[in-house]
Length: 122
Image 1: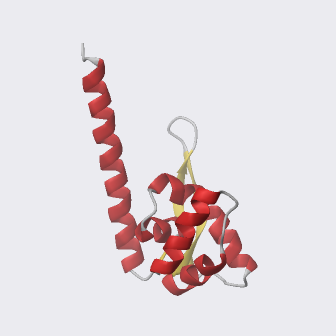
Image 2: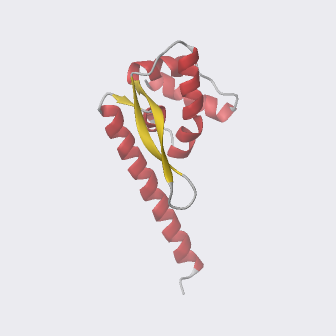
């Protein structure tokens, strides 16, 4: 039987590896020119959980500002069990995301500070 401390260490390593892979994939996607909003946010320095949480709002804000996606793509979204469905995603250019981040401020004060810092860095 594994001890609680070794299970905790395993969990920490698994989460760290998952986050590092997400950052690497996002950096590659953004370097290719167009990417999903979440990839732009992750490559900009947000942690993957926060980026995925706010990517829908950033996409809605971009569309409200009159931006149209540079392209569209598909991804597999996992459902219950082993099933998955294919969904459409909007792919954005870096300039479009930078323009949106300049005006987007969420109500959450901590997240608003993160986005302000991200907008200044872009």
